Image (cartoon, rainbow, N blue to C red; front, top):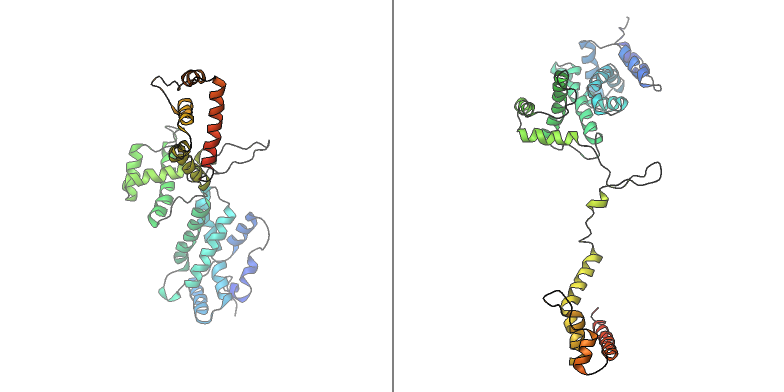
Length: 308
């Protein structure tokens, strides 16, 4: 009895047909040479896997569909992610599909596996395309991938008219919203997310050793930082109850001198009385008024020390 090329996948190690090392082009060339399975062979391998957990049968199903992963992954090259990584994630989806494949349903594995392959690639793109996720709900994910695809088609159609336009027109937004059955506001929001780029919060060091200006410099809010909160609270107390407490510790003359010199503001924004004005009022020298002022300040600081 002779085996067909496809059946031979189960006779020997199916993974031997895929190079373990080498560049991506060598891998793609190798998987494209792997023979396809007939429906009968695919069903037989699927039953062996389901009934006895035959890993060789599972390997035959996976290897024969690696070319499908390569084909699907090419559609997602526009996201700027390595083709090899896209293929790798697609292969994970293919293996999940093989594990859940039911040969009795009468559906070819290729049709069933496409969903799982795309799902894994989508998940990888959403996690790695940007540092910040642009689509978190199921509806947003659908809009994310459909919007990119349809935008590209629109750009291709309008390339001859305006090669510099990058944003959507109002008509295009309305058309996309109608086609995708979503609100135009959702299209605009996703378009904004897609067109925006990631910005590092912390400054990045340039080749010349200088740090670039980063959002941390102007987004930082230290108004609620504990130390500053305590400082502000203490400062407010000193400006109110603290001053009153310190003034109560002075005799009437010392208190009036301090108030005239430091706390009084006239209507013209000028200060209170000068040393000479106070000296003339009390019949002493300006130097004596200064000495009384200095002594009063020391007494006030002493009165505030326990509270501080």
